[in-house]
Amino acid sequence: MQFSVTILGAGSATPTLTRHPSAQLITYDNDCFLVDCGEGTQFQMLAYRMRPSRLKAVFISHLHGDHYFGLIGLLSSLNLGGRTEDLRLFGPRGLDEILTLHFKLSQTPLQFLVHFQELSPDAPALIFDHPHFTVSTIPLDHRIPCTGFLFREKPRQRNLIKEKLSEDIPFEYLRLLKEGRDVYDESGHLLLGVAEYTLPAPPPRSYAYCSDTRYDERLVEYVRGVNLLYHEATFGDDLAHQATERFHATAREAGIIARKAQVQQLLIGHFSSRYKTFEMLLAQAQEAFSATAIAEEGTTFAVGI
Amino acid sequence: MQFSVTILGAGSATPTLTRHPSAQLITYDNDCFLVDCGEGTQFQMLAYRMRPSRLKAVFISHLHGDHYFGLIGLLSSLNLGGRTEDLRLFGPRGLDEILTLHFKLSQTPLQFLVHFQELSPDAPALIFDHPHFTVSTIPLDHRIPCTGFLFREKPRQRNLIKEKLSEDIPFEYLRLLKEGRDVYDESGHLLLGVAEYTLPAPPPRSYAYCSDTRYDERLVEYVRGVNLLYHEATFGDDLAHQATERFHATAREAGIIARKAQVQQLLIGHFSSRYKTFEMLLAQAQEAFSATAIAEEGTTFAVGI
Image 1 (cartoon, rainbow over the protein chains, first blue to last red):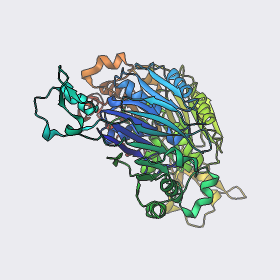
Image 2: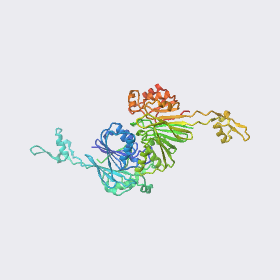
Image 3: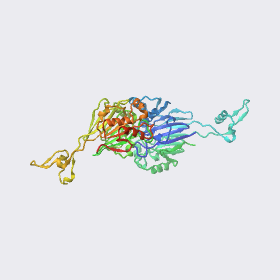
């Protein structure tokens, strides 16, 4: 099943001609999930042909504008588009108040329910339980309450060895095999053995999103061993002192977290608008952790294998 | 002095890949003024290289999202950009409440003052007095309180006949002539006569912005004789019944208002996203009023001559 991250925006607070504010679309099979929703996210979804009907939940990390100013417009357009399916929304205290005020003043009753759940920035918490994965918060060290999000897949099913299985085997038998259960006939004889007809389940995959944070060693434990880590990298070594003052991280610090946490791959973004090219930032992160890539807008990254 | 209107967005509520929500930049000499500010307006200003420092005031017609969701992002970016100059903001009741809530929750104190003036949608009112023009509201007939804006230039100065004037004439004499006053020497002899050295002042120019309104005959008086009229044209003849129900106008109705008000030129926009091309809408408006153009994004229209 597809498990991927598409970068819709990876700029920082000051917009530029080429970088949109933060937004990522997480795709799991047929379901989509937004992580942060900066201004213009709905246009980016249009540009990359993402079907809004697949959107199941939105996760907002914090209430700095470059992470949520697009939410009200997105919800309005979902409403105009005729959505009736509930939408789950996770975010900091106050986000629901903002939305309620906007919709009251525009005299626009939404035709679908938004289930809002307020996030606590103090400790990791399980907030979302999907049939195939969970989402937990990651406390981050930013100027205002801010949480990252950890998408962790549940144990996956064993892979069938299709060459060994004839086409007329009942679907129910295949289901049992994938779940790791041997198949017996009515008199208790083994029909199909898990060991013979399946391969072990691939390991569960995981994605951690760490928007807007200072270098914070606590993260090492929170994101240990994830397949894909997004970590902000607002500054380069040249402005490391500003990173600390402004509750942001450097590219190198993102690399250090990735290395210490032994993740598989690191994505960096949220670069300050003062950087016109990102080679230097990438190089500095790669000095700490070689499997680093830039979160290029429009690019889809697979989570694990 | 330049007096022009640049279209930043002229789409309607549902965004499309090619149309941004409503926003226009009015330029008068070195000053700029925003009329409506849909989501993404700040990106459009970047794309068209508009200097935010020139922005003196923002006028919001009503609180449907496609007319103001970009305001909070624009103000945030002005703040990040270091603005200290006051900004005037005109809009419906409640707009200030929205902004205050956003900035409170993001713990972002603005470094510049926003002077908010609440607009009454009931009757035309003078709301802004610039040295060279005034802005008045235009009551519109929409589903929620909504006002258009009439920019009306003050009487202009006479034009100097430069060929007749030597280069060493004191600046003060030229100023008097442009104001229509003869110039005398200390003993009271006529030095420079207005009739000989100047041509009459060109007529004052005017621009009327009518966003989101049903066909409303009151508009004919409000916008009579303006040089340039922007009038929404959400629907074509095929959906005239929807126009009335939804408090919008057809392209033909925009043309009828323009003809009855004897304006010089009509701009139409705010087309429903169901129209993929606009030739039909333009043709229907032109059947009522031939001097009609489409408010193409990125295009700058001069107001009068």
